[in-house]
Image 1 (cartoon, rainbow, N blue to C red):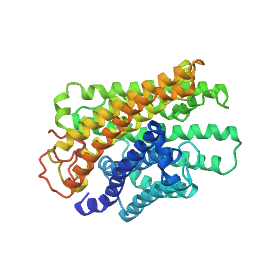
Image 2: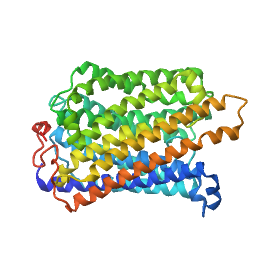
Image 3: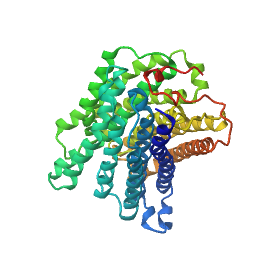
Image 4: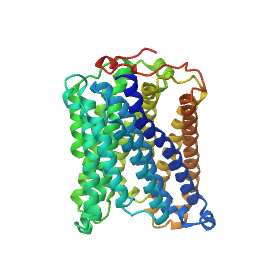
Length: 475
């Protein structure tokens, strides 16, 4: 790939990554504002408009963090990575730029709809049909560009990243189109609509976002550590479990709901086997990081990717724990499930996204990261913030569940139990935002070249796209 081609394709990438950072800050801010209303109910009386009501802030924040921050960011870094392991540069770069702009327009339109008129009430589908149409068109453009050339390169490199990429790219439009048709097309009865919401929720998290993150882990960890992954059969087994059972995991959320008991059991089985699949992938990642502690300390990209790899196991382990029938019945209507969202989005997906940006963005910008304190601020504020948020939700949810199942405890007392945990949660979310602010300031300063580039350059040389690009760079 020559420099002119790289600079053209970099426009769409930069739009996606810049949008990702903006939406993360806004989504994190809305999440804190929503939790403040839980901690201090009197704040609801001082709202200037209904826009800032809790019922609108929560779906708006979740939408921004899922589709705006993680979705946009993963698409951006994959647009850098995929041409390097397929060996085929992007063409029609103006079309890719249109797709990137359309994705940001969909996020802005969805946010406006949720805040102004309220969410749709549908799980993982809080936006209207207009946003669905824009997302599908944008993803069709970006997904076609990302997967271009993979068909002729199956034997030229690692197969697991390509399998996860293909599955994730196909899952999003298939799941979104089916959910839109069944939930808003009026073609399914109420009971089927509940099941469809749960299945679509699983598609978003386990068949779209997780596979795209695993593409980055399976491709970047061997590159940064200089060690190949072993046991292809174990990797293929984990891949098969994910794409066979990933659509059923959220059925365990339907505890005591109008859903057949066998579907709830299917959700429990899916949660357990997805943890087994995550454990299998972690077994593949562990030898890559063993004995690399000094390198992890020096290389900020490897540091974030390592955190994401271990958080991956924690996220699916906690989901399995909450799926156990006895635990599920006690925590079904508590904030314990928010703990899973925290470690899944902020630590697993968020860390992999941050590490990938640190490793890959210099490819299209021909720059290096400065040795600056913001690197440490970003990592430690992210790690400590997620730890506080997760522990607050987890402990608060368990205590809340025990109190709810005790008829001798009044409901007002149950609500008061959450207050100290909400303080911890808000503190953790504030720390995370500080880390994101440090990252955004560092990114802007780096792009403007305000500091000398003393940290390592990109993983891949910007002037080549052959298979040799995947050779590790020693820092």
